[in-house]
Structure formats: structure tokens, C-alpha cells
Image (cartoon, rainbow, N blue to C red; front, side):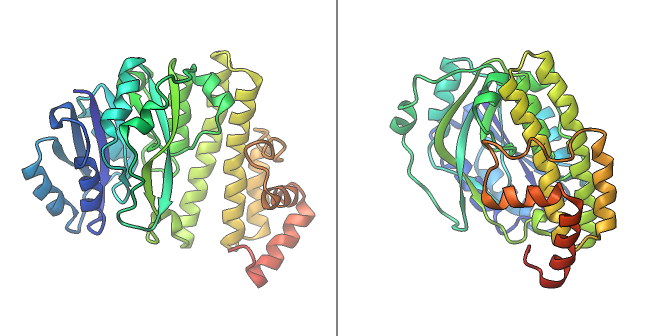
Length: 339
């Protein structure tokens, strides 16, 4: 089997049919790919809807598990997959029609470990750009890089749904999602790239990222923010070992710089979230002190080719200065200009 598409499913009755439909409306034989829907203990009608499709289409397989979150669902899906290549999707998103066959052609022709593409954010339920096989054939002569070289050249996304990859890479290198955390994508994607030998990218919008107002990442409760803060700290610490791995693999200065920037981006956006959540200066100062020893703070390497907007530059300057940070927190608690 060529491809396994793994989709965690948890209480997405409003969106799961759209996701499945997009995976069925493809230009690839049903015998060549499978759609693995991992039921993460849904309590709504998501799985009832999925079962209706599974009865009609042989390529759909449903796996049931106790709730472990999307990380555990993806790990479980991978263990039960049969495809040479893997593609992860989120169940409230969808993909362009009739693109899978054309995407797999350059993958197989070049024996790629990893093929990336791009995505479009949308609030529409049926947004298609009508990409054709000819559009993809325009990139028939791909630039193929080793993973570290690709990182040095491309400001890649953290998300795990903008690429197809060879299953053997994650098996041989014991790459898994860290279960129980909400910002696991960046670790997985980076570790995967660092272990790939043949990486290519096609600048075509294949994925449809649905802007879901009920997304877990939009939750602003104190309990959620506290959990998210711990997750960010875990990722920041994990990136230290990924940077070490890159150095072992002979990564050039630009690749190391990009990974250092990526690590500090988690610190930057964590600080933004804390300010938004009206966290006290004392708590934020305590967090900052934790990361001084790991050289993640101050944010010396954050601003550069990947992050250089006026807002990012201004906030970075503030975050690196205790007096300015205190002033920002005090003012924002009163006037809420950072929302």
C-alpha cells in the first residue's frame, strides 16, 4: 500500500464528514491508500458518521481507543498503518480534490523521504483552488535536499499536515509524538526533517486549514493556559537536544540559527500568551529565570529572517527588558491592548 492517512477523531460531528469526503474525492485507487480514523473516545456522533462512510468505502478503517489526545491517536494510527508513506490530518480540516495521485508521483519517482506543500486558511466549508496534475507537474524537476540543508533554506511550518513522509524514517529513528501535550507538532516535524536524506517542497496549496472558533488552542481558561505553559516549556527544553542532533548531523550555521530561532519563538509566543492571560510580573519573571541557564532568554536570536515584523521587534525589545516588561504587564492588565 502506498499511503496511510491518519486522522484523530474527537467530538467533531460538525466537520468529520467534510474531512472524509475530501479524502474520498481523490484521483488515487482505493486499494492504494487507507484512511485511518482514530476514535479518541468521542462522545458525540462523530464515529456514527464515520461508520456510515466505512461501510461504503473499503479504504476507511476505524480504530477505537481510550482518550489520549491527538498525539496518542496519531501514534496509534501509525502503529496500525500499512502504507509506505504517511500523511497526518486534523479532522476539522480538509484537502484539495484530486491531488493525492499527482503528489505521490514525484515522491515515488525520486524516492523521497519527505515532500512538503503549503496550505490555505479558510472559514469556508468547500474552498477549492482546483489544482490539477499539470500544476504539480510544473515542479517535476524538484530541488532535493538533505534534511539539515532544507532547514537552512526554508522557514518550515511546525504543523504536521503540510507534508507526506516515508514511514520507515520514524520507525528507524523511534520518532513519536509526545503524548499529553498540545504543541507537539514542532518537535515531531523538526526531528523528522533532521533524520531525512531526501526532502523536497512544492509551493502549492493542498491543505485547507479550517479556522475553527472552538479550537482547543483558542481556549483562554486559566487551567488551559497553565497546561499550555508547561507544554511550551517542555518543547523549549526538547529543542536543545534537537539542536544538538542537528550539529551531530553536520548542519550548517544557517540551519542551527533557524533552529535556535524556532526554539526562542516558543519562548516569545509563550510570553505573549502570558501577558494576554493577565499573568503577574512575578510569575513571568520566575519563568524567565528558568530559561536563563539554557540560553533561551534573553531572546537574542529570535528576530531575523523568519521573524521581523514591527510588532515582533517591539515586543522582543520589551520582553528582554525587565522594566519595560513590568510596564507592559501593568498597562495591559488595565487596558487590554494585547488581546
